[in-house]
Length: 245
Image 1 (cartoon, rainbow, N blue to C red):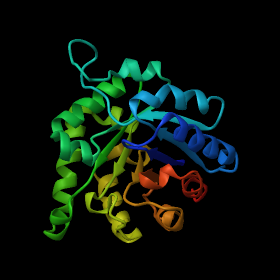
Image 2: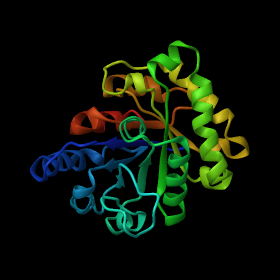
Image 3: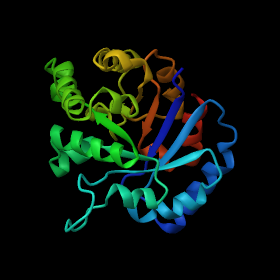
Image 4: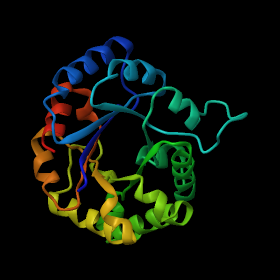
């Protein structure tokens, strides 16, 4: 039985003071979440602060990216071992904003996911289509290509120990949300492509998830939780989403 996982992606938001207040609010209510695991993916510079704040709670910490390189002359990069030093359990890989603004290819995303996995992190591997691709009937083609790259590089055993996040790009930060049925269709397609270990893999939905729509999304057969953006910056919203698990 797959356990619900709710991951907050703070993106490039926060300050020491604001983060302390936010995490305190989440921690104060975390004990009321019985049926879901939670994780916070904070900006790199705040990871240690967040890890200390959630120590001895049921909340894990993750990064928003990871370098494909293990170490060396790669200015500005953050290695998997550095993230582990900051108590990270997860690493978001291939978020649509990384693909769009930083030119990350399907192959690079797959290589990063493998590096994270081999280093001891749990990759949260993001897949998703744009509005144009959806409207042109290319959803399964695009998702299939993104997933195939990961499968070719990582292999089935590694993917079975990873997390996948389906994030329709057109529903991120726009207030638009795929209907539960639309989301389930894609989640079901992804699971159908995962082979014999398909039932082991948690597939999260990401795209303007809120406490008001979380329960309906989580009720779908193949939706195992959420990758939460803006709503994760509000303690009550984040806990409300997790409590719907």
